Image (cartoon, rainbow, N blue to C red):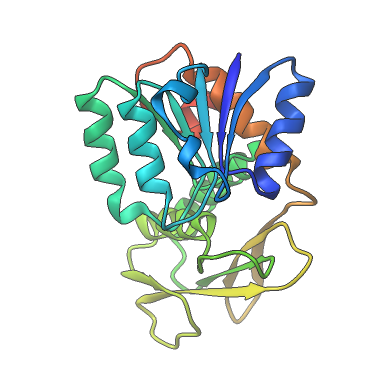
Length: 238
């Protein structure tokens, strides 16, 4: 499989290492220093693109890949206000788009655990729930895309919570997300249910970026033979 890397920072380099170890070929690497090389001619050498940049460039990068007829796996967060537009563009162009707020296989299993626990806890109103996430100081968005996904899963099950807020809150209808930025920290997410009697807490802690990179390569392998819009839930068959 021939891969174009759109974004060649720490995450891009991890993806490259894992992809090459799996006998894939990196045919294009784009970062801020060679953005002018992101052309149809150059990217046409690739079977699939993996996009890990930032909230301000992700949407344009995704659209360009779809416009050029290249399946794209996007892991950038903080741009989802334009996600519906990207999905419509993908459908219109008969393209392939995989988006996940987190490509780690462990995190995606954690998403399933979170949903199931929230469903169980919805029957026990004596427990209040709050989220906490910790990332490295270079993380551009807060809360993280993973924390937002977790919060939205909770909101779907715990109907007493109406919305999430990224701050300490004493309002019962608000789901509190606390974001901390500490180095070094690849990512920790926790959901705690608290009552006067006890606490129930689930935690996912990433030890490094390899889980994210491995999942992104797995998603790229899935994308090359598909048309449509998918998530890691589809890739993993969850």
